[in-house]
Image (cartoon, rainbow, N blue to C red):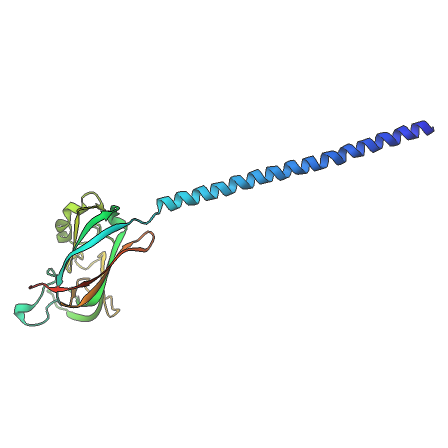
Length: 227
């Protein structure tokens, strides 16, 4: 009886020790598995983030102003009056990345004027702090003169090195759903045409609409179109 009792106790003790020895091993394996899963998830997030950053990288370009001429539309003596078409800014791409026309916008601010109503069919000139916004540089929702004037640049959908872009005070598409927006003293009820006062300073910004970053910022003096 005594011998049997000793053996039983010894066997019981050995079984308990084995279970206790296995438990830490199982725990370690579970921890290792969790760490592997977490590492995979983190690396996937980092990879996706890097890929998105690479795809949405802001382009860089060197744009110069070749000329900027204009004047307030229909103001002053008849012999010195400037038309909308004579308000022109000529920009040259001289280096850096090709700029996609569909995701590149331009904002111009300064003292100028526009028209309320349909030009030629009655309306009123409005004058003051003027803001012009080209939503994009593609031909979409602009008039035919913008397209013909910039045909070489617009051909492949990119503004590339050596190409000019010419902006004009009459680029809007007949004032209906135009992609050129013009406001004067905060009033956007205009015909989306514009003229800027001669000898005044305007601020021109070229913007990447994807990242909303300003690519180029220029302060320009407007030369009188008659000079």
